[in-house]
Image 1 (spheres, rainbow, N blue to C red):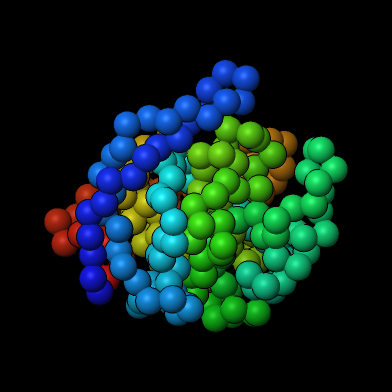
Image 2: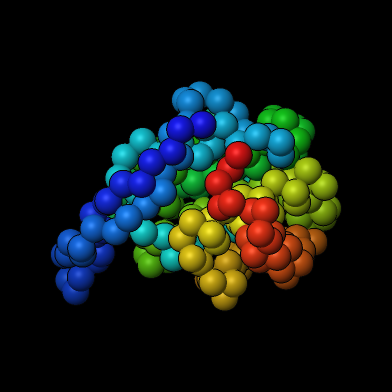
Length: 212
């Protein structure tokens, strides 16, 4: 895999909704092939960034609350929704989806257009967390069952990578329920242990902060 350091501009929301430009910051960008699914043993295009990289502050974890699903099925469903201004959603609101073997391979990590194009999410019900939070959805209903072993392995690796890349603190790795009144990502999702395992992986000497 080819890699490069690039300097990218950073935009922030100022008072009144205006966009302010901050000084460029260096970002390590993996140059990855397009149209490859990601699995626990390889990340493929789940990590490809097509445009200017965004400055991310949060990781927000969700479950689909369904027994099966995929990027495509969620995309179709989310395109039927409208925002608070009555405008239709662009499509799937998450940046990453992790499969459970029903609709997607178990443990597969797939990025969405929101990650590849580095645009805001539509997943939290909070303007701040949508603008600066990476939305990760695991297929499954964790009110009634636990995530699979492959899903847990994948989300730990994904979060460890995001911690290393964006210097996201453990306090900002949260479940949807920490933002609004919801059970998501479900009572059987082991958020605390997932965060701790991700932190340990991110801090290991052999963890390069890169997907390969």
